[in-house]
Length: 106
Length: 125
Image 1 (tube, helix red, strand yellow):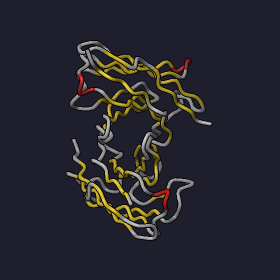
Image 2 (cartoon, chains in turn blue, red; image 1 turned 45 degrees about the vertical axis):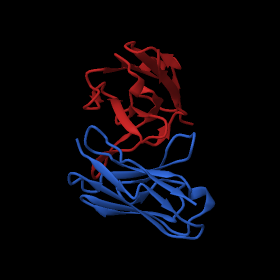
Image 3 (cartoon, rainbow over the protein chains, first blue to last red; image 1 turned 90 degrees about the horizontal axis):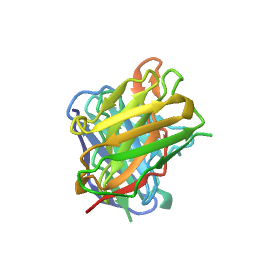
Image 4 (cartoon, chains in turn orange, purple; image 1 turned 30 degrees about the horizontal axis):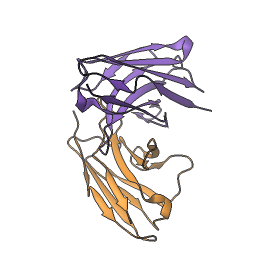
C-alpha cells in the first residue's frame, strides 16, 4: 500500500493568510493526487485532482502543486469558509489511500 | 443531479455482520468508467478508503479489511451494498458511499466527486 503523510497535522492561521499543507507519498505516484476539504459534520468535498487541477466551482485561491512523492496544497488569502480539515489521497493505485488530514483553524 | 444516500443499522453488536446500502441517482454504474467507493471515518479521525466496485463489476478492497468486506451492485436498482463481517468496536465510524469516476483520457486516475451524507454505525454490546 502507498502510505500518505500529511504535515502539519494542524495549523492556526488568520483570515488573509497563506497556508501550505504538505503531502508525501511512500512511492512515486506521478501526479495522481487529489485534495479534499471537510467541514465538521459534512462529507468531504473534492478540491483538486491530478495534483494541480481545480475541480469545477472551487475558488482559485486553492492551488495544488507537486509531482512524484511531494505535493503541496496552498490556500492564499484565507477566507472564513476555508477553516476546515484537508486530506490528500492518491488516486491511481489500489487501495486508494488517504493522508491523515490537516486541520486549519483560527 | 447526482445524489447518493447510505442506509443501514445505526447500532451493531460485536461479531455481527454489517450490511450497508448505497442508493444513488444521476448516474449509472453500467456506464463505462463509472465506479462507487465506500469510505469510513471514525469519530475525530481521518478518512479511510474501504472498497470500490466498477462498471464492469470488478471489485477492489482495502488491504487490511479485504477478508471482511464484500461489495455487490444492482445496476437496475442503482444500488451498491457493502457487507462487513465480524464487527468490532473499532469499526465504529461514519460510513460514506461516493461516486468515483475513472478517468482514462491522457492518463488514468480516479476522483471521488460526489459523496453521500454518511451514516454513523456504532459497534457496541
